Length: 254
Image (tube, rainbow, N blue to C red):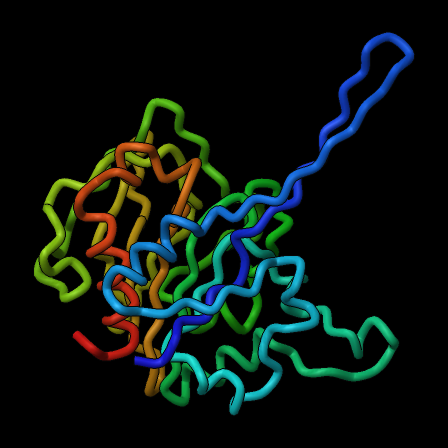
């Protein structure tokens, strides 16, 4: 199996502390995908990660480059980080990488979008994938406004299609999540909802899949790591199998 390309999941955090007139600062770099990468590695799947701060310069700009990967995962990185290129910053025409990804999936590629504060439309609407070419190939529709749902009380996933290959070998009771993106399952016959969460009388898709052209797409409407993915979920014995199944189904290996 060719490597998986993971775009996003990195964070620079800068903090300031004041003591009277004295002000100090500190910064740290964080990678929210460490557990996810370990899970796939345990099943023999290599992951090439391009952090969000590197997407502008390093994310593929050609179909040939995308075909080096079995699956592309977009996780906690917004549309602008993929749309900006060194050429457009210099005032020149460049490739629209969201349209490139849609075309790649249509031709047989595989795309996974995972949730978070900066994916789908995002907690404050800044992810901005609504109305883009990527939304066109996903199994869900994205809101035009902020879609982040914080749920400190926890949301209990409900399996609605346990017979799908993505859920093979996965315990039927998934641990709670602490938030998700409010997306809507497409009504066409190619989109299939596998897991959902109920909130205030509304059913929200947590895991959905779709055939698009010759390719496949999958939406996982919560984090692949902390904090929306609870500590219980991260420690859950089914985590490795579920994350691996998502990738293998997309790559047509199951």
